[in-house]
Length: 377
Image (cartoon, rainbow, N blue to C red; front, side, top):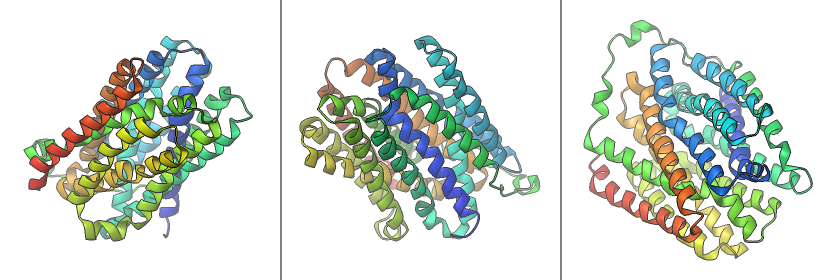
């Protein structure tokens, strides 16, 4: 795609490369520091918890500015500065502050960047997934490359790698020109209350539940598969496999979405989530089964995210685009992720099986809500 889509794609790649370090290897680094399972779960919950507040604050700011990229540039720089604090001290209390600081800004910038991307695409919005797929490429590169790297290198290198990624994201953000929206074009703004109808609220609740269901996976998958006998290289491979399946789906989404439809794609994601966590509990010891389970990530995240973004595009007024994306992020990834992480930190020490079956049960509830209320739209 022509300029500036190369830079948009690169931003997604670096942003999700950070996630490709955080999810597989940050818990292993924290475990190496001597933190308990409950403390690791709490830190991952803090990472999710900031999504409850920061996206909406920055979304409202983004909707009020002529150039939304300024919010993204400021947020990227602030996240990098906050993360550097990890080198000051590694005590649990200090790490809570560091994670809260950098994630407050880092979690806020993605919803605003989604708006920038859709603004650039305009009528070619169905090509969104082809740009977003580069986020999967970044995640895959980080997960596979570092999985191999940590087979012979120390896990203590994790914070140095993350710091380099945060600084790179900041530099890249300043190379992307923002689309200027003059204040005269925003004179009449709809109220956020227009989104508070039963169908839209039910959609957000379903999104919250699906992200809550992912929490045991995001927090403990690396520890889970290592305990099942897999190496760090294999751990990175299976993380990457999920992202590869998601990326392949994204590459064809511009053809699939018009044929399948937003609602049916959303339902596919919920069904995949219901099945995936049960299988992960039963067959984690089988490499072949784990391969299939990770391919289901194309449904539980890829189809879910593509359907959600398209739902927001259709149902959120232009003047509320930043706040609409922020509301989706804070309710689903913020509240859902944080509650899920706290529940996982409590349930996992008792039994990983209980945690995964809880995730499947929550997915079933989300499916029921979707058919009962979201189907009306």
